[in-house]
Length: 138
Picture 1 (tube, rainbow, N blue to C red):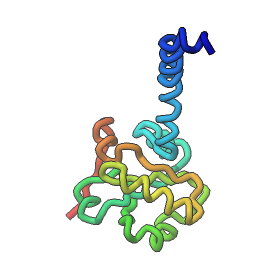
Picture 2: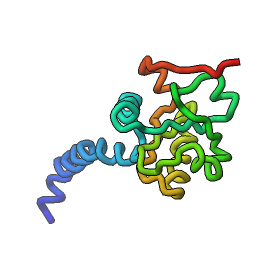
Picture 3: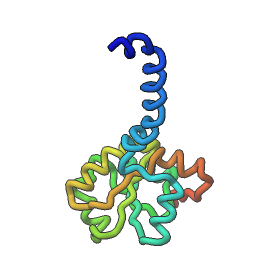
């Protein structure tokens, strides 16, 4: 006990540095189910992933990931099985910033889409990665 009292500062430093080493693993665990823009491109090209944009119709028309299907978040439970029939394929859920897409992952998994993932950062991250965006034709 005397050792702990005499060396409290060294012990505190050791605990703090250990915490800083573990933090990146904990933080990445918080983004479980999240996918980077380059990871999404890899899934689309190699595994024929289906891209579902859960934005509202007007947001989708303003710009979306190429080849994405629009299923607004409010209609996801009813319309996702029609838009993505093959539950074995990876499913990438996208919205403007990623917030709705992360909530949509839970809905998709409840419907049996075990490989559902959200595009981390949404369409904003997609654009920042200089990836192509389509606009709805008038």
